[in-house]
Length: 269
Length: 303
Ligand SMILES: Cc1cc2nc3c(=O)[nH]c(=O)nc-3n(C[C@H](O)[C@H](O)[C@H](O)COP(=O)(O)OP(=O)(O)OC[C@H]3O[C@@H](n4cnc5c(N)ncnc54)[C@H](O)[C@@H]3O)c2cc1C
Ligand SMILES: Cc1cc2nc3c(=O)[nH]c(=O)nc-3n(C[C@H](O)[C@H](O)[C@H](O)COP(=O)(O)O)c2cc1C
Ligand code: FES
Image (tube, rainbow over all chains, first blue to last red; front, side):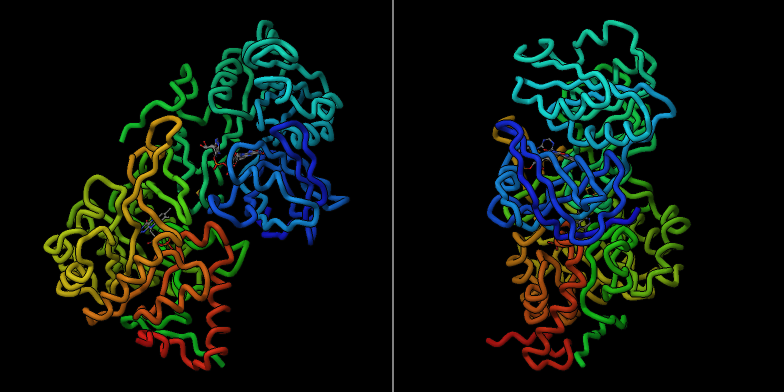
C-alpha cells in the first residue's frame, strides 16, 4: 500500500448540514488502494492562520469514477477554508496514510459514530456490505443537525440515533442508548468520534466482551511517522497515531480499561 | 552543467541540501515520495544512550508560519539503533549523519563512541540544543563552559567529523560558537528550535503538555539567517544553516549569509517534496545567475 501525493480536483462540494460538507474529488491518476480507517493530509488553500496540512479520514472511494470523498466538520480556519472551495479547485493531498480497521470474521457488527466520527465509518460500512456482513450503526450528535447521511448507513442494517437535546432519536449520549441495556448481539464494535465518547464505548464493549476498534484523532504535524507529535500510550509504549493507527484495538491502548480520566486533565511533565 | 557538490569538514556531499534531525525519520518514511539517496545528507533522529519515551501528548501546537514541538527526544536508545536501525540506513546511498543527544557528558560520550564504530555513520551532529528535555539538552548549549566541555569530551572519543548543533536560546551565539570551536568541533549546525509557548485561551491552559516547546518553520528563518551571518563572520568553521527553509530561495539566502550547506526540517511536513524541489530550484537559480559551482555562492552576500 504505497502513499501518493496527488493534486485532487474538486468535483462537488455538498453542504450536508450547517457544520458539515462532503467534498468529492477526482484524482489525476489512478487512486491508490485505500482501506477504511486510513486518512489523508490535505493542503489547505494558502492564507493566514493555517500552516500545516489537515488530516481527514477517507469517507468514500469510487475506483470506477476515480473519485475520493472527505467529510469536513467546520471547527476552525482550516476546515472553514476547505468547506468554501468551489468545483475545479485543486487540493494537494498525501494519501492513504495510517492503518485502517480490520475486517471481522463474521457479522453482525456495530458502528458507533459521534460528530465527524462517521467519516471513516461510511467507507467501512460500504466495505462491510461488500463482504456480506450485516452492519448496524449508532450515530450520536448534539442536535439533529449533527445527524447526517443516515440513508447511506440504512442500506446495510439498522440505524440507531441519539441526540443530546432529543431533537432526533433517543435523548442523551450515544453510550446511553437503550441498545446497551441488552446483551450486545455483535461480533465487533467499530467507533470513531471524540475521545471521551470512544473511551465510554470502549468500556461498554469490554463489559460485553465484544472486541472493539477505535479511530483516534490526535493532532498531527507530518502524518507519516517522522515528527513523533501524535503519540498515544499503548501496551508497547508511545506509538504514532499516524502510522500505527489511527485505528487501534482498545486492548492495545494503555489506560483504556479504566473509567475515563478527565479528558484534558493537567499533564505530568 | 551546474555543480551542486560541496565539501564540509571532509564530507563530500552531492548537494548542499540535507534533511534536519527529527523531521525525516530514518529516511525510509519518505521512500514512497522520492529516493532517500537524493538529499546531500540525512541527519537522522536524535539517539540517546538509554531509550526515552519522550514527553506526554499533546506535543505539538501550530503557530503563525510555524509550529511548536515538545517531543522530548523519544527514541529507542543507541543499542537498538545499532542493531535495528543502522542496517537499514546502510542501504541509503548518501551521507548519513547521526544526531547525538544526552543528559550528562558521559551519556554523550557513550553514544558518540558507539557511533564511531559504525562505518556508514560518516559524522555525528552533537545536539546540545534540545529545549524539550529537563536534564541536559539545551542546558549544555546555553553556557560556554558546558558547551566546550561536552564538545571536548566527545572530541576525545570521536575521530570522524564532529558537527555541533547550537541553540538560538542564548544571549550571544558567537560566544557559544567560539567555545565549541575551542572544544574541537569540525563544523556547526545552526539553529535548533527557539523556545516558545502556546496558550489555549478558551481552556485557559497551555497547549503543550510541557507548557513550553521548540518553535520551528518559516517563523524562525530571519533569526536563523542572522545567526548564521554572525557566526560565519566570527568563527572559522563551516556552518550548516537551518531554520524555516522551505524553498530554493531560502536555501540560497543561507548560502549567501555564509552557510556551506543547509538542512530542511519542518518544511518536510507541509510539503513532502520540499527537498527534491529545493535541489532542482537551486539548479534553476544557478542557471539564472550564471553560477557554475554552488560553493561559489557561500558567503557571497553583496554588501
Ligand atoms: C486521523 C484523523 C482523521 C480525521 N478525520 C476527520 C474527518 O474525517 N472529518 C473532520 O471533519 N475532521 C477530521 N479530523 C479532525 C480534523 O483534522 C480537525 O478538525 C482539523 O484539523 C481542524 O482544523 P482547523 O484549521 O479547522 O481547526 P484549528 O484552527 O486547527 O482548530 C480549531 C479548534 O479545533 C480543535 N482541533 C483541531 N484539531 C483537532 C483534532 N484533530 N481533534 C480535535 N480537535 C481539534 C482545536 O483545538 C481548536 O480548538 C481528523 C483528525 C485526524 C487526526
Ligand atoms: C518535530 C521536530 C523534532 C525535532 N527533533 C530534533 C532532534 O531530535 N534533534 C535535533 O537536533 N533537532 C531536532 N529538531 C530541530 C530541527 O532539526 C531543526 O533544527 C529545527 O526544526 C529548525 O529547522 P526548521 O525550521 O527547518 O524546522 C526537531 C524539530 C521538529 C519540528
Ligand atoms: S504526525 Fe508526525 S509522527 Fe504522527
